[in-house]
Length: 396
Image 1 (cartoon, rainbow, N blue to C red):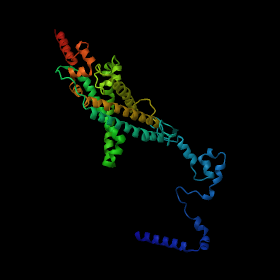
Image 2: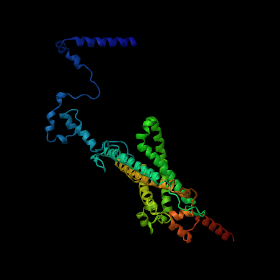
Image 3: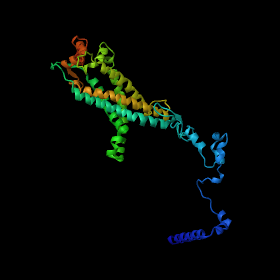
Image 4: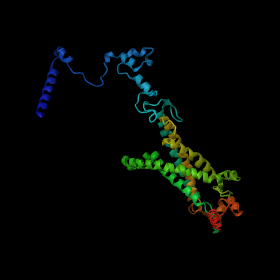
């Protein structure tokens, strides 16, 4: 078989060489039957340049021509078809509308998102993400981090002015601390995974390589999806648990006017939560938190009755990214003040109890309510004692 193939190749090569060696006159007089007998070549054929009419564009209806009409005057010019594709025209698709509403649409129609040019929706979304959210969002987080570092360098840990008394007041019950801890863990997982997925290609991928970075982002993406529902549920629990003590009260405006005494070192009275903590609650936890959860549910396609087109997902992604970056900026300050920024604050969340000196210095109005009996100094112990007393009454 190999020998016969070689023979055929040699004969074919000899024929081509002999034909190429003929003069122009001889080639012109080659039998027409041999040319006509050549088999038709399958596939897309090149357009015959002699059939193209360059002046066809002078026709008044040139721009309105269909692809079939254009092919008659300019074979191979598929501009009408691509113009329809670019305008969002829908073609045929066998996929059901319920599961794939845009299966027949190759390119989205023109639109303009805030910060983008008037272009196709996919390109507009890319411009907003790459030209605004990524650079300015990353810059905002770096500015906040730098401001915290500068503040800590100049001020250091805010220490107590008075010595500890040894008298403890319950600031957070076990349930309140559990809700806060669950929300903090979920937030940390979401923040780390989100930062790596958004900015990792700029500072991690050059160090790790694309393969290892791909495995890392795949792992973090799944962690992000699993932590999302935990964050949503714990966020609602945190809101309902702390909303009562975060309502506006007397002294909040004065706290804002004096900046909480952070820079002036002036003592400013506050309730159980000061005005800064209330702002964090209503803006960072309530507003941005709920926006992040709602947009995340859309991105996961968990909102029933919603038409999940590409434009819906693009808008949800932009809203999710902006709200997340804003919330992270606020929470960075909260984490700093709640850990190394203020003496005794972290112990209050770890154990649930703070010293009376700490309460006087940071939340004096709350301490006054405790001393007056308006607020219990140990809610957990009081509830436990009440349950024991109730059990005794039942037994009696």
